[in-house]
Amino acid sequence: MTGKGYVRVLNSCRKDSSGGKLKTAEGKAFVVEGTNDAKLKVQFFWPFKGDYWIIELASDYSHVVVGDPSRKYRWILARTPKIPDALYKEIVARTSAKGFDVSKLVLMDQSRAGK
Image 1 (cartoon, rainbow, N blue to C red):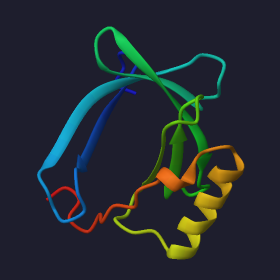
Image 2 (spheres, rainbow, N blue to C red; image 1 turned 45 degrees about the horizontal axis):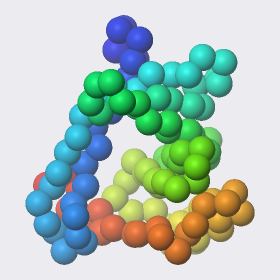
Image 3 (spheres, rainbow, N blue to C red; image 1 turned 90 degrees about the vertical axis):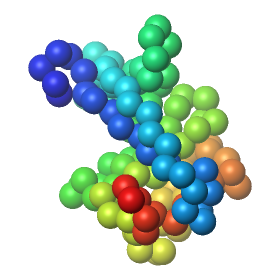
């Protein structure tokens, strides 16, 4: 937390896996009271906030799966550029079982992350 009641969020991505231009968006995440910090309202521009729900968190915090209540969006976030293939497949299977459309999941090459 920043001491101001929110967590700073910095998202970055490339539009294609061949190393296109890095795009970033900075926002603020506010914890939804009574959710044990599992649900956030994230704001990238005022006054709009989106739902970011933590639907899976590794015990060692090595990865987290974030989704929204409509199950239209879901992200697999990791602390390393690559997670083991077996773990990735397990995460995909678990999110599919929770009603997310895994056919729309795009696996991006993260080897150039932050460059």
